[in-house]
Structures are given as structure tokens and as C-alpha cells.
Image 1 (cartoon, one colour):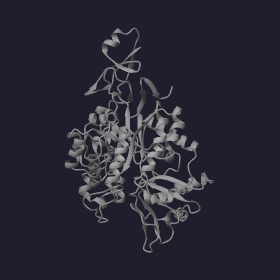
Image 2 (cartoon, rainbow, N blue to C red):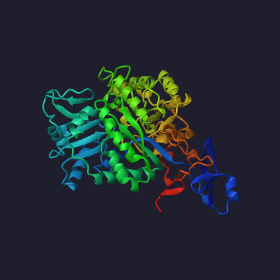
Image 3 (cartoon, rainbow, N blue to C red):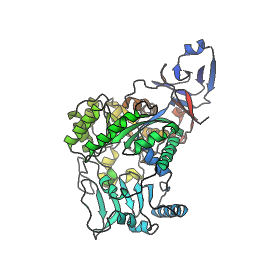
Image 4 (cartoon, rainbow, N blue to C red):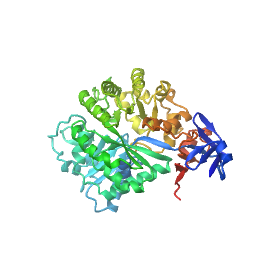
Length: 517
């Protein structure tokens, strides 16, 4: 059976068209259609048919846990957060620990443990900021972690905020500090984690996504994926997180997992994940010019020799190097390590690359680096506004140089970093094109906006190229029919129209995954 899709806007590798032919699981030609014994037609009713989206960097299991916990991401005041948490605990009175996310770190008011104590004091409470590099906890959580006194541990990276008396305020920044609290949390049950992953899987699919790279897989998480595999709709590429203090033993553990993924139809061991620096909101991303608030340059989590050693071992395993680097000095550090390391069979990836310059981008291009960025961040929302005190207005305005990256010919791959930001690709695309998410917002650096075609490419074929796919599903004849159908003509919509667009159907290999049959 060959199907003719018509009466809509249809993606083609170099623009938009109006007709597409599909034979079973593959894109076909017009000749195939007219020579077929059986033919049918599919009326798009003015909608848009695109290659299915791929998310190059997200955290589905973490996001699923948040989906099933207390809802605080829409709270617009600290008091709303407190009341929401209090209500959630009333509805779940048997909780021994409450972990929730994420709160808008730009919300006005002093974020202290005492404030949280006034709502929940009887059990440990841990709230994740929207950058997911900062937590805000109550006194009970600090007590369990042994952090209520003035003798606080020194940390290689990150910090524990303190008040005038030297006591923790309840804010802990970066993973060395965060882990002091979270290591005491009860481990999620296997069943609850499976349900969390499936909840994330359903949400991602409904937004038009058929494949995701989980860019933070640690001990115990691969087992969740394997247990849930039969029920998953999406395909997942796993990037295993390496700790600079334990990476030799990390490798040993991950190598025991690799054979378990061989032959899986939905799961693939893709990469090793390296956190080179932090984030701007905590003034921990590594920058060349000091932060205005701290007069420091942020953190580097790895030393160069260890990073090169770990990259070499990654490449020996046939896996891809995937590096978190946000500040310009962090990106420079990552590029230098890649230049010194042995070449792998897969080209490397730098995720985020928020603050760059032409010299850094030229080096990335020369190395064949894919830049995996988050388009939804390129707007003056709470998360970006909270960076201005640290970076200043000029540096903040210069972030997310997508236009420069594309003009140099760098493979620009989009992603959400969910739960850090919105997982819906169409909203990320809208921001990449308009550099804002609503008409009321100030436009962020309009010179770095990109076209609708470029933004769609970044969320589709560019992610496949980043992951080393040999056969890219781009609606060329003979490629897999992986597609998402929208309810309107996207190329004629303004910002509000793009933000309001709805997914009507999602296909992979010609099979309709959404809505479910």
C-alpha cells in the first residue's frame, strides 16, 4: 500500500512541499505510487508534516520523577510554593522525604531553610531550582546530612550558602554540595522509577519526539530502562555520567552494562557524559572574565590530564564524548582536551555552549564538534534574568549564538535538557526563530535568531547526524517514515501560532505511535 499525503505543508530536505508518498515504512516516489497495486490518500487538512523530532540531550527519568511529585514549577511566589508543598504532604501523609522540582530561581524573596520550615519541618524537604544545579532544603534535610552546625565541609567545587553566623541558609550549589544531602534520601523503588520513566515517555511522544538521548545515566538507571523497555514507545540513547573522582571505577561498572544493551531495539549505549563546569545562575560555569557578583571565574570539575585519559577510554569503547560546557572558558577547556585526546569513531559533542566567541566556534568547527544547545533558553525569562547580576547585561545578551554557529557550518543540534526546560520541540523552535516565547517579552539578541527551516532541521536531522546515524530520516526517498503531524501550516504562523500548534499524530517506521490505536 502506497499512501499519498496531500493538502498540507510537507517538509522536504531543502524546504517545504505539498505532496509526500509513503510505502509502508519508507518514503516512496511518485512513480512508486502510480505503479503500486494498492494506493490510498491521506488528507492533511492544511496541517504540517515534518520528520519526527529527536531530543539530543534530556533527562527523562529525572523529569518523570518530577512529573509524579509535587507540582511547583508554575508557582509564581515563594508562598505559593510553600502552600503547594504543604497540600501535597497532606495528601501523602506517609512520606518520609519530599523531593520536588523545579522552582523558578528568579522568584522574589529570601530562600531560606526557615521559610521552608514554616510549611514543612517534620520531614526532609529538597527543592530543585530550575537549573537543576542548585537545591533549596529545610532544616530537617540539613540535620539528616549533618550540615546544621558551623563546621561545614570544604568542597572541591560548588558551595553551601551560609548566613552571618556561618550556618547554612538551605541553599546548596553544584553536585559536590547537593550530594551531601541527596545521598541520604530513600532510593526510589524500581516500580516507581519505571512508572516515572513511562510518564516521561508518554509526554515526549505526545510532543512529536521519537528518540531521546538521556544525558545523565548513573548507577541503577540503565536497569530501569531495561525493565521498562517493552512498554517504552521511544528509542533512547544512553550517555553514562563519569565522576572526575571515580571515573576508573565508573568505567568498570558501565562496561558490565554494555553487553546487556547489545541487541536492544529501543536502547543504545551512546556516550560518556562529562561535566566540565557549572551554570551561570550559581556563578559556577567557567568564564574568562570574572563574575560581577563573586569576582571569581567559576569552577572546572576536571583536570585536563584526567579528562583526556577518560576521553581516550571512551573512544576505545567506541562511545561518543558528550561534554557539558557552558562558560567560554569551560568550552575552551573542553576543546583543548578534545584536541589532545585520541580521535574516536564518533565525532564529539559539546552540550550547552552558552557563552562562546568566534575563535571558540572556529575550533569547534575544525574538530567536527556538534553543539547540542537548548533553544528554549534563548529568551528573557526567569532563568535567564537570574544570570544578569552574575554576567552583566552585555554578556547575557550575547548568549546562545545560534546564527553564528550555523553560519560557520557547525552541526547545531537542538535539545530540551528537560526537566531544566520545556520538552516540547515546537516551543523551542518558536523561541529559536523569535528569541522570545511571548509578544510581551523583550527580544533576546535578535541577530542570533534563525529561520524556521533551520530550527526544524536542528530538532530533526541535525540530532541524527550528531548521534552518528548513517541513514537520516529526512523524507528523502528510501528513508524511514518517521513523522510528526501538526494541526496548522507552521510556515505561515507567527510566534503565538507556533506556540499554540498541536501535535495530531506521530509515526515511526510508518507505524502510528500517537495517538494510540
